[in-house]
Image 1 (cartoon, one colour):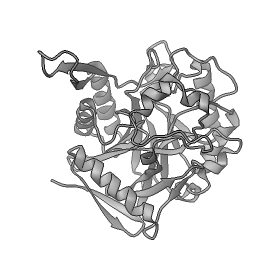
Image 2: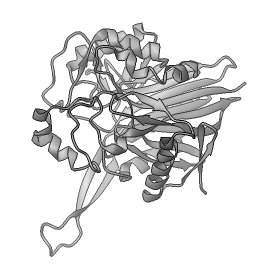
Image 3: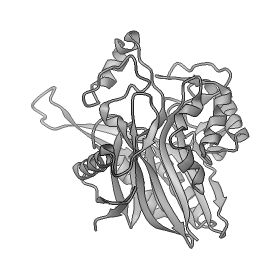
Length: 373
């Protein structure tokens, strides 16, 4: 008997009828044995916006039901928006998702809750665990023993001046993992693996909008996770696809891009200094005031990661290509659609540019991913 695990990119419905966001993918998500997504908003009736929140959306609490109707089983709240509206809104978001039949991982009332895995037992007895962490962290968004938040996987940045006799020349950027967080991640994976057949890790990490580039700490964390026993890593946050690598035969999707992510734009927002600074990072990024999907053109190419599971093991790894148009609704592409090949070509290019070993081969509507030794 074979089972299916699906993972999607960022989710942030912000429209009167949030069910529209999943109108073209509900049938696929619902048929999966486990479907995982990453939340980028809050489903709460009220909250106090924290001053460190850069872009914060408060979605109606009843919209959480659309996540359950979409077919999701698990939602990661480990991310840089988990506390945008304060701990009360986070608690209400988790409560509303639970009421919709969706389990939450990666965030909670304290660090013990945030680091707790969600474990699902398949009909054949296979136990699958999901853990979630975030490296993208506004100040105090990470949980502690006495504070709500998400499970952190922080990183440090060092700037190295390349030409010491040339002031003002661009620096080389190095990043490395926060050692205490890395140790916690390893321990979480090891202890979870002791009672589960498969452990999947969701990571909110990386460099948003900049094509192909993978930060040093991502490679470090990915290696540590796989060596500790993780069977796959699913990355979010970059809002564009990033490359795929295989470590010890286990897949690391560095970024699944967006999924159902509404983002309006108006002239006032487009004129803000904060937006203009981010806009420079994306290729050919121009505001589109009539669109629900104000991201760079590359953000229209996305995917649903798919793992086939049998006898307690991952037997096949790959993805379903997606295209997201101006209505912000993800649509699964098939080989007769030109965007099907466009997703493969883009992912192949950014994988090679990043020096990763992922290779991709279409097989019907599915694209198989393998590691080049």
